[in-house]
Length: 394
Image (tube, rainbow, N blue to C red; front, side, top):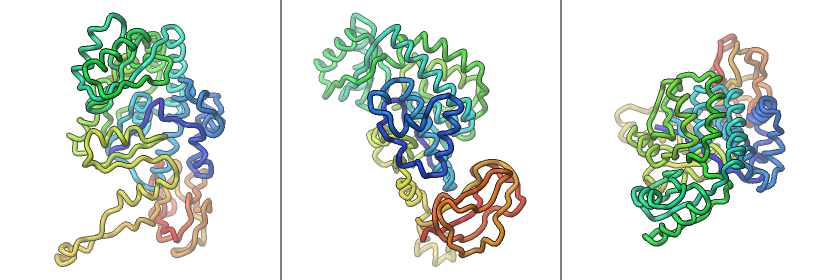
């Protein structure tokens, strides 16, 4: 079973969108810019590290790029049964599952980032990663510190992030070293995320969430606050608001997914932090991070069925083999399908070539290859991301 995971703030890097500029999914950047009145193209292509590190920019750019990559993956006809995101990534997970509309989600992310920026200005703080101690040890030392410091992230066994006031985090860091932490590293952040110091941001975000339509997710979505899967939209409304002041329970999230028999973890978005955390939690899982278009080929190789075994062949079960060069072109929106006339099976298709229309929206092939067959039929009513044609890259 496949689960898509989505990174949070801190995974962004300068120029992280450059490899996607010519991909058809780039159209989402214009939609996000229209929704937020922010030049997302500039953020993804030209912003330097300092600019991207600003909370409002980091969150918006990371979310939008994750959704762009998700769209590119779905254009291959690949979907997942489950979704989970780390901190900000939870908004990506809810959008991917259909619980949030993309337009609504990108506006919520913008509000979230700006609210957290203001909370940082009101109550500055910091964070530090503690390696080599178990959960109870770090919980205990935080409770004994004279000052405001809490666990902010349970990232994986032996990797915990603490956050709070500068002096309290310094004291907790020293205490962690004294009781045997292998490493304590200050994080380059200006705020104590996922602690009570974010209370003012939670109030502002809660109001926006109350005015946003939230639907029942399609598939499994696991929450940060309790590491459990939820379906009820009203429960998610409460969880999204609580998340800002509650620790991210990523260790527990992975435990829940593994108990549900998810074995293939695909990280959708910039960086590969979650892929590393998954490996630390369970090295037997299949893992892949999708950062660039070239990673899509690795994804197809990973999920493609293997050839039938000789035993299967003897029993007469030949089955089908999906070649790693196969590609699916999917519908960009809902509507009636009308293919281009005179396109024939076996014809060579070029990158960007028009294959047809779904309603008034054109369907262009995102890659070159041989047209192996039509999956949709003329005048069929399609849904977004429904497979239309099958190509084999030559």
